[in-house]
Image (cartoon, rainbow, N blue to C red; front, side, top):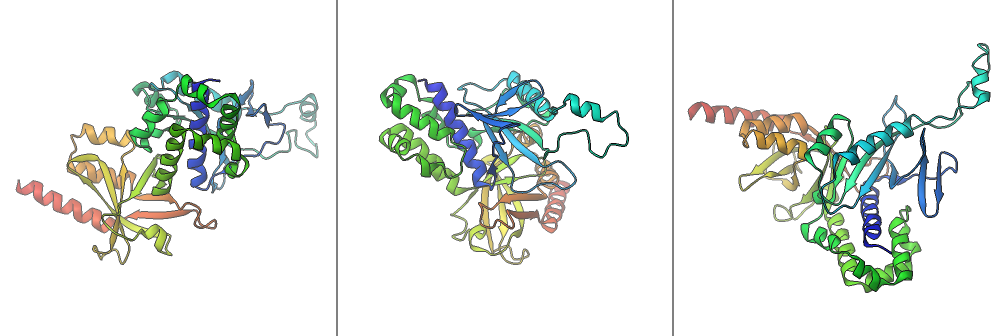
Amino acid sequence: MSASALKGKLLEFFVRRIFFNCGFTEVKADGIYMFENQGLFFINGKGAAHDADVLMDPPVQIPFAYPFRLLFECKSYESKVRISVARNALGLREDINAFEIVTLETIAKRKNNRRAEYAIENRRRHFYQVGVAALHSFTPSAVEFAANNKIPLFSLEWLLPQSVLSKIDSIDDALVQTLGTMSYSRIKKYFGDRRKDARDHHAEALSGIGSNQLLREIISEFDETLRSIYIGIIETGDLIFLKFNSESSRRDPFLDSERFSFRAAIHWRLQNPELWSFQIFTNDYNDRNGSAFYDFFLPKSISVKWRKSEYDKMQALNLKGEFFSRIFIFNKERSTDFPFYLINLDEEWLNSSRDILNIEESES
């Protein structure tokens, strides 16, 4: 029994739940390319079989390409994740995507140019995108390496309040000892269960969590956070987490409206320049009074550009036009036929804002 192993499974559990909330689905083992062994899920690569922490199918695929799957390596370190982890993720991606079954029989078939069968294994192929998920943040070198090699990074710091992260960090071997061997094993097995309906199969583990105040609070606060946010994808591929601002409007249009497409403006605040807000126009988008606000923090790569400009107003408008002109928001499975809300940045508003700012600068 160890605290680090429990925290690792807890991180996997959280990441899996986040993607389930976005409409992703679990990948089934086929017994050959992917298999389960002693509670772990393995995927074969060119050089070895690899333990896949979180492996998911997305709600939609891109045409004219192999269907892709998302694999996240989960690192529950209390310190920042270093570049070596990003390098390992790149190696893992190359290894599993290069894997192919080649036998003497298939090689022999290549000699016959008039063969009736292809000399390849008849199977459905995928492209596996490999990312890294962490409890905390990443070192600058890890961020740079990941960006240059198109490795997605995800930190729970971007989603959970610091109070929850502190509670996760406080899980130690002394707490694990209080759980007892049997309860520890059941809870760890529950956190590692890859099924969406895992909760229905682990009544004793849930009872053990409910009996431990720290674990109970962590799970409860995570569930509350997940219920209150929407997850979106911007044009860089970065995830953003939108929280409905109930002070701006009593009505959440993502829940109350039958629409799946919206127009929006984006605003920021002087007191917290990296906390931005979508203003969703719920009526005709020329009617600025009928709107609701969703707050979000800028992704790391964009916030760095914003900060380097010393929070220049024109640079803010440029960033909005470049990175936020179209945003896909997962609709929490409200509709399986159309898994996204589509938010288009209102070009009329953006151009008008530029004109006003140019006038202000020319008069100053």
